Image (cartoon, rainbow, N blue to C red; front, side, top):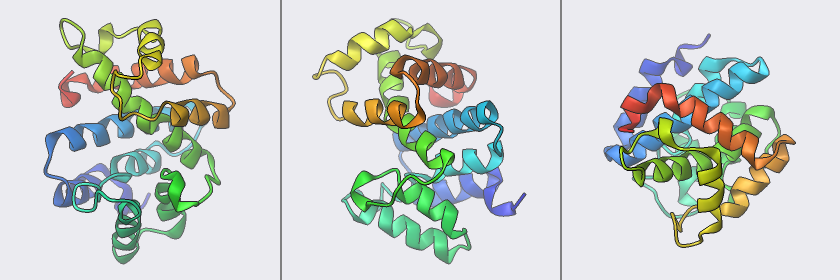
Length: 187
């Protein structure tokens, strides 16, 4: 395993560019969902977790498209990350027109928006615990356009379809992946 992908290295890079706790928590959530997806599919959980942790590391400094994720891709290349890793991260933003060419890229696209949405669902629970969020509740809230309005529902549906899964299966995956890291997420 390359040192580039270990959690200490990726956290250092994330924290170098991302000071905001909200964006850090989103990164931790996507990291957990990606690690669980790797385990589910027989892939390298350390590599996939690093993809999840770093997919938005540049967003705070470069929030406008296409700067995000193009500026981040440039930084990753300068730091020695291989092109496949960089392209996987680029592919999570459809406007880059980088195709999702591998399972890691497809899973990243599928869980990115959904992690944020599930976290928003937890925040409106009386106890604010991710473990209390039910799949049926997430599905109902997805239909409410004014709830977590910035979350792209079409990306969530497209991500599940690209994996050949029903949205409920991806929602279940995300909720189960986030529950063990609830404390780190503040949920």
